[in-house]
Image (cartoon, rainbow, N blue to C red; front, side, top):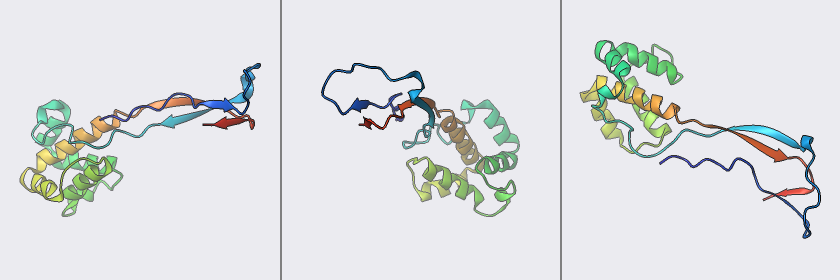
Length: 151
């Protein structure tokens, strides 16, 4: 499930019981930018063997899985040489699953990496591409008056 976007403006209420007689001045608002977090939770967006859902990742995974894993490590914030260490693929997969709250277990991750190494790398790369594409940016206008109460 996707996170529902926040309303574009917060509700501002005056602490008076009478009708509003004046409107705020044009310069009384400040603008803030809020970036929503990518979608979290659920299952992997593609299956372990859904290699044809992204042709570019499929070709890189088929012909040079280690190069694809080096790019994955770099995009994840690790050194490009990280994939040369034992257990690095498992660490990247578990880290991705935990960061995005994807359902699964450490045992399932270990089995995917040990039995289907190129497919496991492709699945993580596809997942990061799809989850990164769901980021949204909102502009929020808020009144700066001390007389207004934020509800």
